[in-house]
Length: 91
Image (cartoon, rainbow, N blue to C red):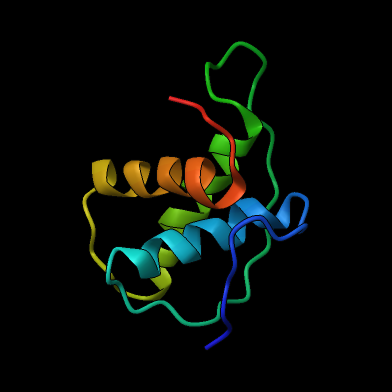
């Protein structure tokens, strides 16, 4: 299993890696995944692109790794990833 470090210069990949990191921090067994992300959050939807990417990653990991976490927990994981792994102090 690859070691993920906070503050790594991964650009947009940091948001994806951060979710895996946050899931592991929460005690979930998450290995490697091959995922493709495509989409467009409508302007005015109230969800920043980084949050959309993190939530999509959390949902994908939940399904692929059969974690069966509640959606609220996945949203909290995504926020933790953005705050602590990526370093964006959002609420």
